[in-house]
Structure formats: C-alpha cells, structure tokens
Length: 232
Image 1 (cartoon, helix red, strand yellow):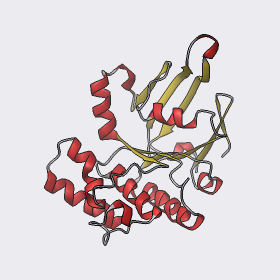
Image 2 (cartoon, one colour):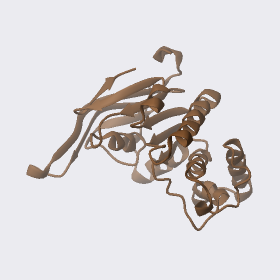
Image 3 (cartoon, helix red, strand yellow):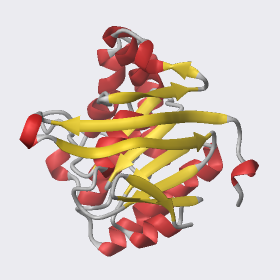
C-alpha cells in the first residue's frame, strides 16, 4: 500500500536532533532527522539496541523534547506549547503501550483502564462504560475485576492496550509491545494491533525488534547511525 493511500499528514518531525551530556561526555543520538506519519498508517521503527528508537518514539509522543527540531501534529507546532498545554494535548491525542505494561497491581483490570480518564477528571460512569467496552473488545470481558497479578502476560498487555485507547487517542505509540511475551501470545497481540488499525483507522507507530511484527506494518523504517532508512 502506498503512502498516498492514507489520509493527511498527522505527525511531521523536522530536523530532530537529540544530544545527551556535555563536552567529552556528549552523546549524539541523532541529528537532523525527519519523519512523517500519515493518518491511518501503521509504521515500524527497527534497529539495533541503543540506537535511539525509544528516544525517537518518546519525542514523537511528546514525552521528551529534542535538543533541536520541531514536531507538528496536523500542522500544529506542539513544541511551541507550554509544558502544561503539551501534556494536555498528549493525554488527549496520544496513547502509549510499553514493553513493561506499568499497570498498577493494587487495582483490577477495569480500574487500570479507567485510570487515564480518572486523572483527566472525566465522569466516572461514562469512563467506566468506555473501559468495559474496550476490555470486552480485546477479549477480557470476563477479567474486569481481576487484579493484575491474576492475569497472564498477554492479558496484562491487552489491559495496557485498552488503557492506551480509553481516551480515544489519534495515534497509538508502542515500544516493544511484545518484547516480554512468548511467540504464541506475541502473534495474538500483533494481530490485535493490525485489526485496531484496519478496523478503526488508528494511526500506529511501533518500535520493535520483532521482524514478524515489522513485516505487518505498512512501512518499516530502520534507525541506523542517526538516520531512518526505509526497508519496506
């Protein structure tokens, strides 16, 4: 499928440079890096460990700031926002799934999924209804009241996906979403991510070492020496 088959440009990063440290301890992760993500597209970012894949994802998701460069969402310069406005924008437009699910073990599955909305001050009744629908959609309708420790690894990751989607984000960013799962469970999650994109038009950027997952994306970009090289 060509890039022209998708909607308008959703995310555009221009001239991204990320440098850690100063002087002789300075480490340049990447410099003058550009990337465009179209609405409805799913993209894989691959590359060796330590090359900056997660750093790039965090910048695209507004969890981190570049040393220089700009990030635009639908043409809007989100780096020009105040920290508070950028955080509000991130919470309402970006969903995150990580290798470590970061679920709260003292709460059950339903409460974990509701948590972003609770923090945002949304009405509990409406939020609860949306959270239940997402858990049911992801095959966890019979696990609503289970504590996190009572769920399998694959079930925990599905709860994390539901939590990422409960506020209806524009884009889902996933960092090694199946890195801690066995191959069978990984394939279930892979299929689920593709279905979310195809059935909902959810834009998706996935950092992964898993070549099977990367092959299921519309585009696969490999980060090498601070540059993104298109492999698919």
